[in-house]
Length: 458
Image 1: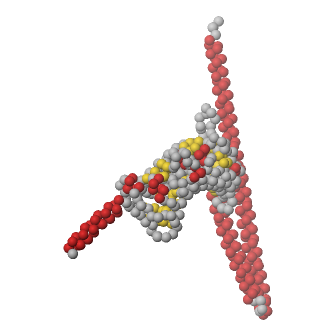
Image 2 (image 1 turned 90 degrees about the horizontal axis):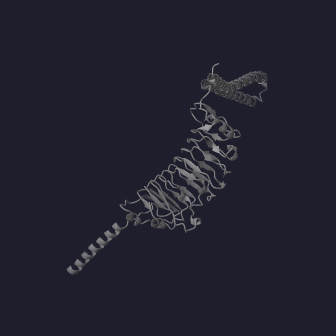
Image 3 (image 1 turned 135 degrees about the vertical axis):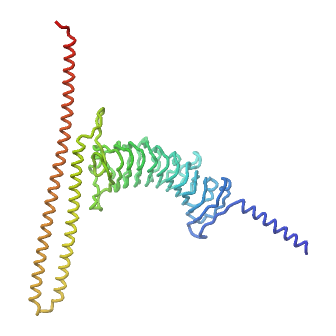
């Protein structure tokens, strides 16, 4: 009996030892819900080395389509780990990832707010058509080389915001005809390398290149017929080379241009045929952002400046006068807007009163329809109500005529101010011409004086 007890104790000890060893050798994670197409992992277990990460055991994902890892730390998503993740959609945000192997079966990768420097894929001998990736979100990482994206030719949405790209070669996107969203804002881009041939993206709806350091973009060979949103704010752009006007984007709905160094002449021409949406009419036109403080000129609320000729020092002629004119125009606009609001409120109040009187009349007629004894009283009240309606109508007509007169005066004043500005500019040009002639005459006189001085005296 004692012998059998000893054997049992030895067996228990051995099983506990081997069990502990197997537990410490691998770390497993599980989905929060045992069934469903989405597998959520609340937190990955901590790991001290890459070997520990490779030994991590993920649950069976053969019947899952989405994997979301909510918390934890994972430095490298290696090929061996990626092969275990048989899902189509993978969310791994804020996990400290430095490199990710892209499994060809992935259709969506959401990798925001990591430490990514590398996107790994199979060697160059494999066909790029084998990748099914359609959505790639790598915002807020440390990527520098966009060439890593070359194999993913089926991309439809690409988010590269807030990385460390300094240039973006548009030739990369020639082989991505399905691209609908391309966002590369906040990278410090200094150059957009134009494509070798034509860049045709028939499905591109959104192009975002704001918050960079771009001074020029050559868009001569770009064809974006479906573009609805174009974001170029907060760069150093003066003009878009090769593009005459934004009207070439027929479906354009949103345009952001503020925070640049636009040339007034180019900007005026580029927006000449664009219907900019007005604040009081939010149903038509293109939504355009605006600069808050402009030192010189504005075109549709966007700051710009006149580009000086070669060799000429940039001087802002008549800047005080232009500022005074602008302030006067702004005051007129403010007064006009206040009057429009007042008129609108007054008309609404009158309309409500008219509707109330009409309702009262209708109620009165319905209530008194079968009471012939009070017919005279009804007639008297109806006459009184009708007189009140006529007075209100006359008041509305008077307010309308007053508004039209004020609007006419405002247009005349604006025309006068624009005419004065043009005269000032012409006078400046004439002054410059006279100054050039004076300098020429001065040089001629000095030359004659030198010639006479050099002749020997008789």
